Length: 481
Image 1 (tube, rainbow, N blue to C red):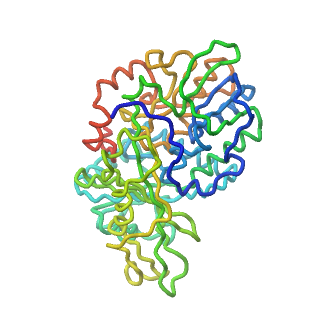
Image 2: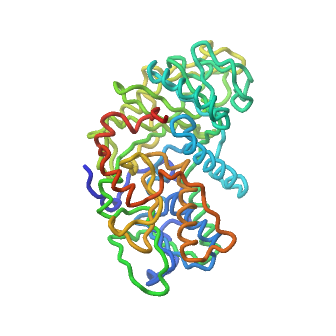
Image 3: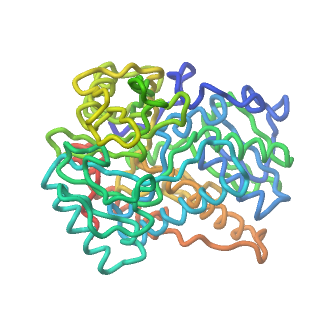
C-alpha cells in the first residue's frame, strides 16, 4: 500500500468542474518543442503549481519558468475536489488554524480584487455531528479555543438542540437574523452542530485557469500540457537554478505521501413545489461527521442557480481498501456512488420551503430517496504520514538534493493551505538564489509543514498511512491539544 504513485492515467473520470474547459489552456503548448533549459521547472498545474508560478512572477519576474502537466491543465486533484474552501478553526492547532485562515483570506481577496469568474461564494460552514461523543469532544475543544485564542474562537459557534444563544454578528443567519437552530440549519437529525464563519464554495478549476491564463498573457511562462514527467535529474548548467516539484513524488517518499482515491457526485436538486419560486437553496456549506462505526466524513456545497446542483463528496469507507494506495482516477466505485446518491436525504432536510413558511410546513422531502447524479467522478489525494503537508527543499537522502523543492501531501485539505504553502516554498527558492530583493517576504509557515531530514526520520517512526486510516485519523481530527 505504501508504494510510489504511478503516472496520471490518460482516461480520467469526468469531473463537473472540468465540463467547461478553458479554450486557452486545452491542449496548450506554449512552444512546439519542449524547452531544453529553464530557471524553474514546475511539475503539476493544480492550485499549488499555479500559485507557485504566480508568486515567482511577482518576486522574480526575470526568471524563465516552465510548467509540465501530464494531462490537461488542472486536470488532477484541484479539478476534482469538492469545490469548497474553509479553515479548520477547531480541528487544527491554533497556529495552523491561523495559517489556514490567512490562506482563505488571501484567496478571498485575490478573487475579489481580480474579479475572477470562479463562482466564489462566501457563506457559513455547518458541521453536523451525528455522534454525541464526538460532539461533546468538539464542544470542549471549541470552548477552550474561545477562552485562550479568541481571535480564532470568534469564528465558531456551537449549536445544540436548544439552539445557539451567543453568536457573533458574522455568524448570524444572514437571511432572517434569527437564532440558529439545528432545524433551521437543515440538520435536525444531528446531535449538534458547529457553525463557522469564512466558508466558501467555488469552481476551483476556473480559479486556477484564470491564474494560468494570466501568466501566459504576461510572458516568461511556458506551459506544456500532456507532458508526463518520468524522472528528475540534476544537470549542472548555469541556466538551471531550481526546480519545484508540485506533483510527482520520488520513490524514497513513497511511504511518506500515499495516494488515496476520493469520490464526488453532482446531484440534481429537488424540483420546487408550486407555488414556490426558484430551486432549493441549502444556504451554507456542510460537513457531516460521525464516529468510527459509520466513518462519515462527508462534505457538501451547492452550485448557484439556475442549475443549483448539490456537489456531495465522501463515503470513502465504502470503497475497496478505502481507496488507499490507488492513483487511478479513471473509474468510480459503485458502492460509493450508491452511498452518495442515497445518503444525503437522511442527513439533512432537503425540503423546499416557501418564503415565510416554517420548515417542514410546505416542502418535498427526499429522505429515503436517491438523488439523481449529473456527474460522478474520482480524484487522487496525497495523504501525509504524519498528517501535515510537506513544504521545502527535498534532502538528498530522500531523492532530492540542491534544487529540488516539494509542496504536497495535504491529506485532502489543500484548498485552505496550498496557495500560501506555494508562496512559502517560492520565498525559500527565490531567497536562496538572491533574486528576491526587498520584495521577498517569508510566509509564517507552520513549523510542522517544513520538510527536513529530521522530520522525515520522525515520520517513519509514526504509524503508516494505512494504520492511521484504520483508526480514523483522517476523519475530523479533534485531538489538537
